[in-house]
Amino acid sequence: MQYSSMQIGVPYFYTATILNWQKLLKPDKYKDIIISSLQYLVAQQKIKVFAFVIMPNHIHLIWTMLAKNGKEMPNASFMKYTGHRFLEDLSLNHPKVLSYFEVESTNRKYHFWQRNSLPIALYSPTVWQQKIDYIHNNPTAEKWNLADLPENYRYSSAKFYEHGIDEFGILSHWQE
Image (cartoon, rainbow, N blue to C red):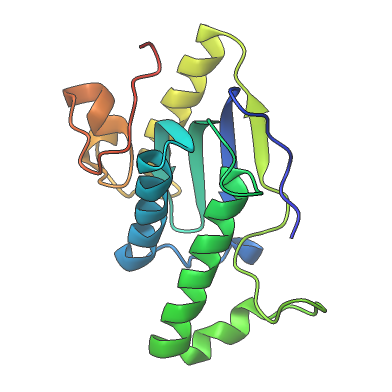
């Protein structure tokens, strides 16, 4: 599996999409898999997360890789771990859904994340704020209509920036 290269110590706006834009992340249990992976990597001091949103078929993160996780970059560990957990749950609870994620590959039968995650290095305070605003407003977009206000969408960092509440214990303020 290929992951776009990222460098240690550089903050990135990062987008990862579920295969063929399928809405795998609509149920909270799959969002919680993403959160648990981020919590682990933050606790292990492998990443720093500044902003995030988990949408039904994609995620946006602003994060920095702090150190490799064994031999691989933390973003690769994140993608592998979440993919394995999705496979475990679908195999056990929703085996018919697995067929939507079948791929023709020599090294795997299923694939949950599209291959080319997109990291964009953040180089100025203006770009930081623009990307944070984009992340936080995503759930309120007419296309999604997941919340009336950004801070009312649970799987986002908007509440942290609006009210100082970090429900999942993974966030660092981008200006600190």
